[in-house]
Image (tube, rainbow, N blue to C red; front, side, top):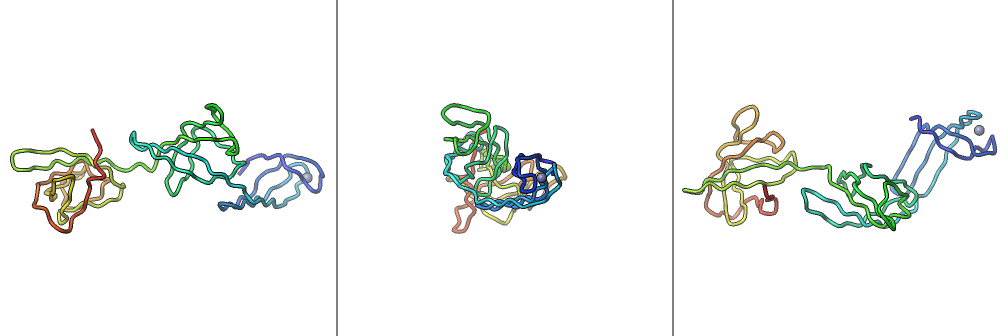
Length: 203
Ligand SMILES: [Zn+2]
């Protein structure tokens, strides 16, 4: 906490450099405890944040999603900043005001481009279907659990897991983060299955 700020000090009765001691922030409210570096006086500054709807385009593995997020108008954002949008951590890759800029106050921003850094895990699955082996990749959360009890579905293909390969060996049940590859066999369609069709990714 050694951010230096220029603020008005009631004792010095002037704009002086301040050191931030404490920052409490909620979506619409900001409370700073600051110390005047000129006279040493410690005081609080409270502020209600004005929010603005900003268009944000988030890319995840080449797919992008357009969202609108409420951000405090006087927050300064720059390319490379990490922000949280609806629970997802994203890194700003581009900012547009009336043109592309490296940084800007939210007030002037029209569009933000960002990439997701809450990156899911890509898991490769080999599915043996009689004479053919299909290879599919799915994107799932890092802690998603695969197991050999469940019947899964990708597109028209239903399958059950025979073996999960990890760094440490072969398993019947494992979380996505640790998986190197999954080996499975096709199975009959069942009523209760885990549908991974929407999780399929190319390559
Ligand atoms: Zn002062």
